[in-house]
Image 1: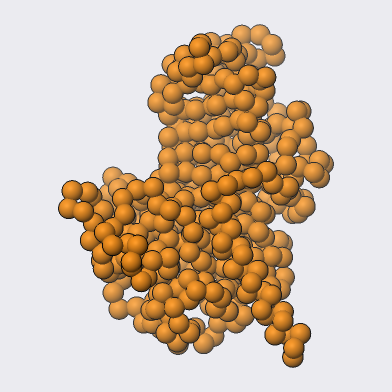
Image 2: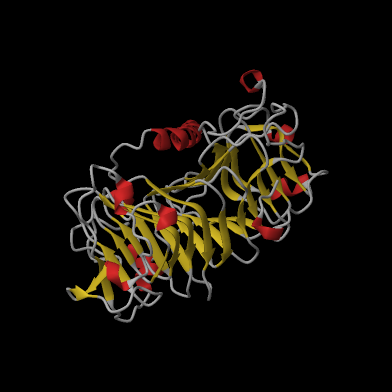
Length: 438
C-alpha cells in the first residue's frame, strides 16, 4: 500500500511538472535532445527523408502513417536566388511571384516551368542568411514536398502543401495561411522553434493525416476540416490565441507520447478549442507511454470588464475547450495510471488585451471545459480546474470514468468541479465568411 501511494504521488508530481513546462518550454526554448528536434544530416530532404537514420526520427517511426506512405518520383526544383542580403535588409530579397520558373533550377539548369502540387522543391542550405522577402509580396507556393535549408527564410502569402515539409536548423517556413492538402499521409518536421503561419487549414482526404514533429507556433486559427492532425512524440504545437481553433466533425487531433498541444497565450475570452471531431491521445499501434498535455487558457466569463475602447467581449458561456455533441475524447495508453492525457492551464501570458482587474481575479490561471459529446475517460489527469469548470450534459457519466485523477491547483474536489451544463449549446462550426467563433 505504501508503494502504491508513493507511485500515485510521483505520477501527480510528474504531471504537474509537465504542466509547468507547457509555459516554460515556449518562453525559453533551449536546445533539446528530443528525437523530434535533432539536427538532420545535410543530405536529408522532405522527398528523401532517410528514415533509417534513427538519430533523427522518433523511435516509433516505422509505425507511423507517413513512414508507410508511397511516393512516385517527380521533378525537383531548387530555388536559385540565394544571394546575400543588400545591406542586411531582408526586403531586398523580395520575390514577386515565387511560382514563376525564373526563380528555380531543375537538374542544374533554368527551370522551364514553376512548381505545382506534383513538384518537390528545395531551398538550399546557405552559409549566410537569405530570404524570399516579405511574405505578402512573394505570392502563393503550391508544392508536393518542400525542404527549407539552413539559414533560409521561406515566406509566402500562402502555402498549399500536398506532401512532406522538412525545415533544417536555422531555416523557417511561413505562410499567412498554410493549407495541408491531398490524400497522402505526410509529415512536417522542424529543427528549431518555428513560427509557421497566421492560420492553418488541414484538409486531407481519404482519411489521410499530417504528423507534425518539432516545435511549431501560429498566431490565429487552426482548423482541421478533414483527415487527421497528429502531434508527434515530444513535439510542441502552439495554436493561435485569436479565434477559436476548430476541429470539424469526422476529423481527429491525436497527441502522441510526450506531445504538448496548447494555445500560445492566456486568452481570457471566447473559446480556445471547439471539437466537433475527436480529441485522442495515443493510438492502438502507438499507445501512450508517457503523458501528453493539453494546455488551455483561463476565462473571465463575463465577470471582468474590458476597457470601453477595445473590442474583446467576455460571456458567461466562454470555455477553454468545447466538446460538441458530435465530438469525443479517447485515450489509448500502455498504462493509464502513468501515461495519461493531462489538461492544465497554459502558463503563458496573452499578448493581446487584458481585462480590468485580472491581477486580483480569484479565478485567473484556471481552465473550463464544456463536454457535450462522448467523454468516457480512461487515463486522464486534470489540473487548474475552476469550481464548476467541467460542464457536462449528465455529470453522472463521470462516475464511469476510469483512471482519472485530479492533480495540483484545482479549486475543489471532483464533485465541486463537475456540474451540469445548462448554458452552452453546440458551437456552430461553420462560421459565415470564416469569421471567428465568439
